Length: 493
Image (tube, rainbow, N blue to C red):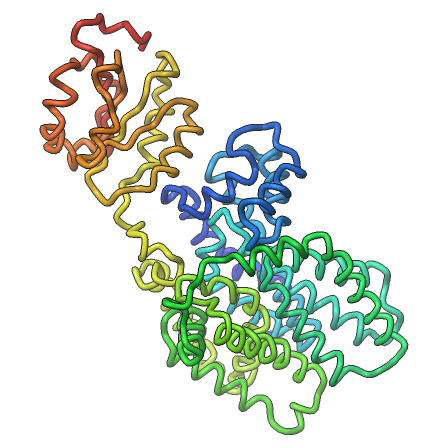
């Protein structure tokens, strides 16, 4: 007996992605790109306006569209600006992406294909990673799915499409362009399909007008696009060659197990026999991915846009590729144990890829030694949790015996604490003038860094005395030092 797919089957699929992404909402310090997102909304200031954010992106990050950051500003006003709360926006957008991938597959192919498409989006370690980062990369594929769905509904509904669907197509297309410039590629695929395959009816001409209006709506940002594309940093030395783009795309989509990708892709091709290829919905699915992917590969060959660490841009292709993969599973339903085996294997390799260092190669974490950073976010949280009552001008020094963390990350957490936050390392001792500090807080990892304190005795401890240990655990120790010539209550701690 074959169980008919129902929409509520997508709920456990979504929960899988939500659970894994939720575990990472506060699992690591903010990264450099997340710092940039915060900078566009004024960090922890509450008087930043949407106009301020718009101009901040235009002036400081012209390689990106402003919509995500304006949305982030509104989100911050609703839920606050803590890192987990800000990352939760990407989690929510990821959930909507999975749900709309189901809707796209359901309406274009079948409910079963929709469930499989949602599965491939949700069980993607690469996509899940961006469900916990303060960036636009879980928003981008969701808008791509929304626009493809809107186009299909407009052009395939037997009756007159409602104004809501027309409006969804228009607003989704504008939002796609204003979110990220790679949003142009799904629109390019739609344009090619529309020109070559779609029936040239009155509705066809109306849609041309809608898309022309989309272009007009993007004109205010066009000078910024020109600035961002003409003044960008060259990536020619690290950009992937065309065969490498193809192979690495298979790696990240298949959770670092290309043989499984080949099985699914081959099954989708077997599904598409000659008669099915003539069906407009099947042509639509393959053209949505094929045209966009070919254009990305060609553009990368000419403009060197895609090193491995920036393959996040191709997440705009996730819904269309997931729908192609879904056709492969639909074909394999002739052998139900085989379908179950493929899906189980996909889940297993997704979990393994999520916890592997190889994923860091594609998310830019590996090249920056991010995995070796001290747990800065936990050390700052420990300081906040113990509510020091001293003068807010009293600096906080964090002992770092691992790889050097960019100063702007310390600046960010200093903004969060609303007090000076300094990185204490052997190579930064000269930046700290201990003689002028009447008092300071020192945070370090108790067991791991205790012996390292001897390195700083002559510079720090010799002129100051330990007045209080506010926290002493295996993970974090928080000490309060005061100038040896002053009383311990000098800072009001």
